[in-house]
Length: 344
Image (tube, rainbow, N blue to C red; front, side, top):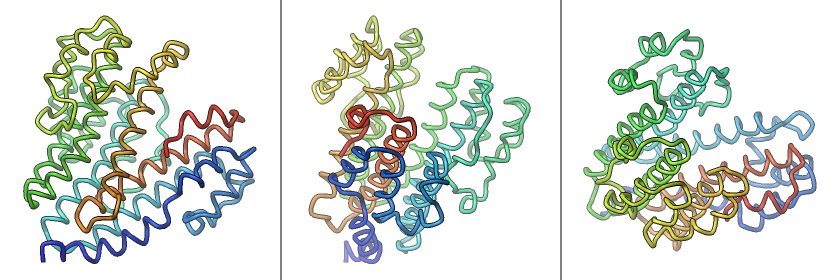
């Protein structure tokens, strides 16, 4: 009976997992000689139905990403329809709401930097949550945006808007959404809570490490950085006490080298960082490591919450992979460079 509550959702997720792209398929997409070959190969996959309205000639990275995000949202909605226990539905509702928070953060970044807002690339979740984040794109100022924003985000941002710092605002939004996720996880069984901590806590590790590295690159003082460490009680392997040396390091390279043993793999990206002066190699390495962790959780497809949560994360990362390949193919970037951006 302890696993019966997952049976229906598990069965539907197993079918969808079979449609996920294999390592060989991802490699063939990355090695496609041009956009047309890449897109045609992608049509020969589980995305065929979702992409049926597009053609290689009419499609581009933007239209492809819209279709892929529609597929991800459909996966979350499928899971929510398939779990009937209230505590499970509450948990997956908050996990799904992460995508709405991603939309809001994208909107805030564009507004604070004076860039136009492309709401067409938002995750299409407004029909589900009924909060029209995209309608705020025409707000003339942050104050005007805040006045029109719905809860729970209005109160969260109101307390930090005076800082004028996008990192502070993003941190506040992350604290709210991850706090809500873990509050719901506490209502699950001890084993389910442990699995959620393993997966969602690992994502928090990535957020915390990348926040430290961004602050280092931007020259933000250590004392300010300490306040941006996200939900230390829910971090998985990167605890707050592990962060001190990185926070007080002289530069990005020193910060990376001071990370605990579980993250020593990031040192392999130092040379690429020095050449490109970009944090992308570190972010890719962290997501690649997370991908392996998700695959470990999914191995054997255990009948528990891990298979369902792992599937949703796998879908998100698969879209990340496809988008990275699509951008490279659209701009004629050589296949050997594409492979550096893909994890499988």
